[in-house]
Amino acid sequence: MSSPAAGSGTILTVTLNLALDVTYVAGGVDWDGVNRVRSVHRRAGGKGINVARVLAALGCDVLVTGLAGGPNGGAAEADLAAAGLPAALTPIAAESRATLAVCDPAPLPYGTAPPGVSPDDPAHEATVPNDPARTGTSPDAPGVPCGSGSVREDAAPAGTADPRTALFNEPGPVVTDAELDDFLRGYDRRLRGAAAVVISGSLPPGVPAAFYAELAARARERGVPAIVDADGEPLRAAPAGRPAVLKPNAEELARALSAVDPRTRDGVPGDGGARYSGSEARGPGTGVPGIGLPEIGQAPVAGALAGAEVLRRDGAESVVVSLGADGLLAVTPEGAWRAAMPYRVAGNPTGAGDALVAGLALGLVEGTPWPDRLRRAAALGAAAVAAPVAGDFDEETFRRVHPGIRVDPIRP
Image 1 (cartoon, one colour):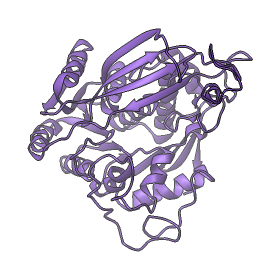
Image 2 (cartoon, one colour):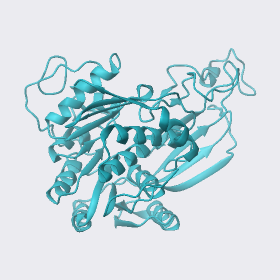
Image 3 (cartoon, helix red, strand yellow):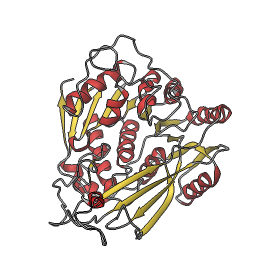
Image 4 (cartoon, helix red, strand yellow):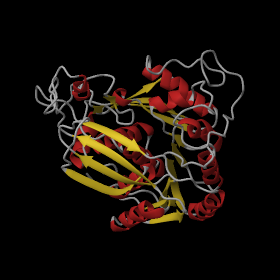
């Protein structure tokens, strides 16, 4: 795969909830027993860092920014230095989080109980790979099953199950106002001469939900296009900053535009204090102003299209929605397109969405036409699934998948 060169300037990535990512690879995981780990990977993580790794592999100049503290933060900084990734991380007093991914490349075949467990034992339910309550498609990985059992090009032999990955994410450190002010001062300086900025991931406790909107607005004031990849309240608030691109997946889009009171929403990063800035008038059956949004689970493309139009109307220039097995949808000032994957790719979906965002950032800097931009981004997302850890992508998978991705215009 040739390494494209970005335009002049550096692409900044922002990772406020940086993590020390730990990946365990273990075969035939018994969730009720003791397991032996085949291999362990530890390295700096967080969505912005994963984006930076992919961009660097594509030949781009990158700079990792964000917050780091404690032994986990120190280990992450050391890993970035060892990887040759330039970083300017703002120190904080609290300890950066850790995350754990358990990847099972060879789950027990369907109906097989682990040693010492009878197939009639209720504990055996945990080993059934195709239980829809325990499996599904990664919403950030176009055409990528996460234990779905769906047919794919490199399907597992009969009697075996698809690879499965379970993720465990700590919430992150509490960040003070003074530490955020320190970060903003450095952020403003580094925007000078930047080609683009990617703002992604969860917010640690204590950071206002509207903070990503503020970062996007500061970038826009300085003529730097911003991509925001967020969830929940930060995604709802992000259009106010007028980012060049918003990149939710279908589930994130549905959550962001739901009618759930943000003060009682479970699992949303940030302090939940920022309110949606749009009109108070709401469309029937939705939590968004002036539109009746179809259920995305029932009509993936129609629902995502309607939701993307809401985000654009509220300030986002373009919106790209990853639809899992249904590919990608982009709604932009130049038109709307859907990218469809030719087949599924098996592997670890962690980081697939970040590779996709890296492709979007590269296309933004290069000024690549949207259809080509989407094709490359979708192929990078699929290629990331074939790599063992987040932040990497498999070049051979990219070469195989890229030509077969179909990008068609759609009517908004």
